[in-house]
Length: 338
Image (cartoon, rainbow, N blue to C red; front, side, top):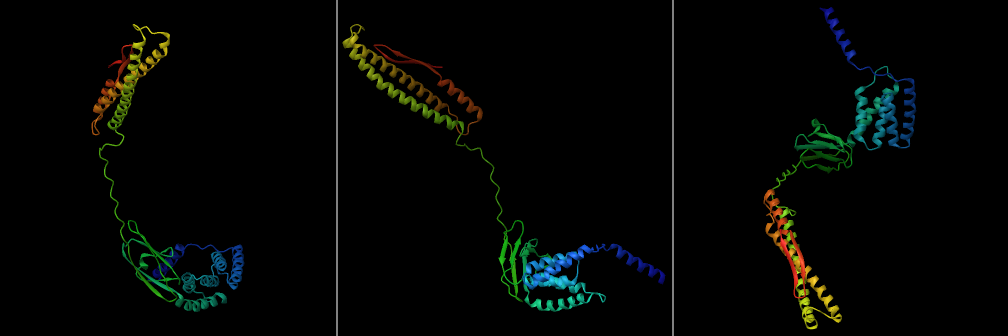
């Protein structure tokens, strides 16, 4: 039975060892680079160039992990006011610990981490975020998301003005800057408001649009009636002047035979007669076309087939042939609608 238990223990140890990932051993070049980075970090730390010091110690620890580098890294972060990160670095050294065979510098770094951690704790701020609605919202402090398990309990924060943001789909986002001092605790309750639901646009109805064929045809009829009316007025005025010229010529001419002295009056008579005949013809055509377009214009809600038929009728009614009629005893125009 003892042999069986021994073999079982050895098997478990073997499985654990096989399950652990193999850590890459630093090369000599890595160690040399880490020493150079650590030297630069120490120099920057002495000159209070905390940003450079944090960068160099972080790089060196990535190459060769050692508690001495982590403690110095935490000191640089503390100088930058990043107390939460420095707190975690000190905690890391305490969690990992050092063995009895470790260098004395590692043992000294462990003791320094304990002391500096105790001195740092009172300088931390604490924020408690109570999320009431919705439960799936994402909460972040200074852009760093908070795990759901950490909601409702106090969480370490750097003293100053941390910004708390809460967001969730379908809700108005929340943002608030919290003023927290060293060792101070602040609590914040958040209940997001739902965004108003957007109403769906109503389906388009078959209403008459400004550019429907019936309206266009009516506009054309008004234009034609205007042109026709102007033609009739001009034709009437020039017709009256033509009749006056004819009356004058009757007194000067004998049996439709005029002397050369009356030639200018004869030419003027024919000119006015031509203008009157053309104007009257345009007026008749315009008025006829306008009336045809007006009375055959389809209504706004008329079917497409009826509208097409109405346009065809208007075209047929608007077709007219005309010719002026001018004589010494008459002036006008004659025409036919087709």
